[in-house]
Amino acid sequence: MTKPFVLYYSPDSANLAVRFVLEELELAYEEVLLNRSSREHTKPEYRALNPQGLIPVLIDEDQDAPMFETGAIILHLADKAGRLAPLPSAPARGQLLKWLFYISNTLHADLRIGFYAHRYADGQRAEDMLRKAVQRRVRDHFALVDGELGKSGRKNLAGEDLTVADFYLGACARWAQLYPPGYEQDLHSFRHLAGFLEKLQERASVRRSAERENIPGNVLLSPRFPETDLAAVMG
Ligand SMILES: N[C@@H](CCC(=O)N[C@@H](CS)C(=O)NCC(=O)O)C(=O)O
Image 1 (cartoon, rainbow, N blue to C red):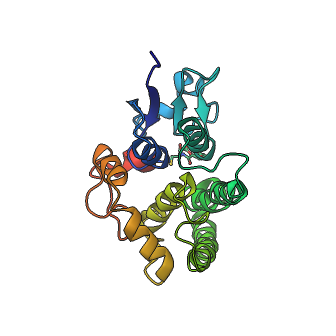
Image 2 (spheres, rainbow, N blue to C red):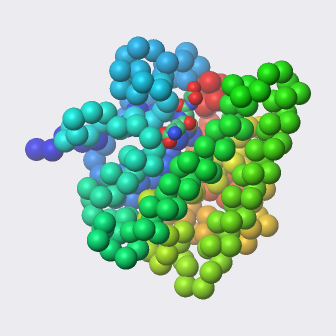
C-alpha cells in the first residue's frame, strides 16, 4: 500500500499553498507541526530534511529525498495525480511553467524580502525603506497578474483550466494582505484578481485547508490572521 505524504507545516506559512493542492487533489497526507516560536525549523533534525531550514517540506516515500520549495512540491503532486497541471506534452504546459516560476521566484521571493527585511537591510530606517520599495514591486506584480486574468477567455492564471499556479497565487495574495503588519496590500482595486480570489476561496479544498491551519473567515480576499500566536507564524 502506498504511504500517505507527510507535510511539515506551521499555520499560514508557505505550506498553505501545498495544503490547498493536497486537499484539492484529495491526496492522503499526514502532517507534522513545526513550532516557529521555538525555531524548530532551524534545528538539525529539520535541516536534515531541508538544509535551508525553510517550511514546508513534503515527504513522498516514492522519492529518494525529502522535497522542499513550494513550487516544486505542488508541481510534483499535480504530475503524480494527473490533475491541476497540463501534461508535459500538452500545449498549455508552457503557460503553467512560466506562471508557476514567476510566482515562485518573483512574487513569493519579493514577499519574502518584505517579511524578512531585517535580513537584507541594516537598521530600522533602511528596513522601512526596503519594505516600502518591495511593497511597490509586489503591487506591480499583482497589477500584471490582474491584467492577465482580465484577458478574454482567461479564467485562471495559466489559461482556461485551474492549475497549481492558481493555488500558489491565492496563497501569495493572502499573505500580501496580512504580512508584514503595517505593510498590508489592499487588492480590491485589482478587479480581475479580486474576482478570481473570491471564487477560489469558495472551493472546499481551500476551506478545509483554512480549518486545518486555524484560519477564520475569508481565506484569500480580505483575509484574517490565523487564530494562533503570531510569533508562531512570523518567527
Ligand atoms: N522558497 C521557499 C520559501 C519558503 C518560506 O519562505 N518559508 C517560510 C515560511 S512562510 C520560512 O520557512 N521562514 C523561516 C525563515 O525564513 O527563517 C519555498 O517556496 O518553499
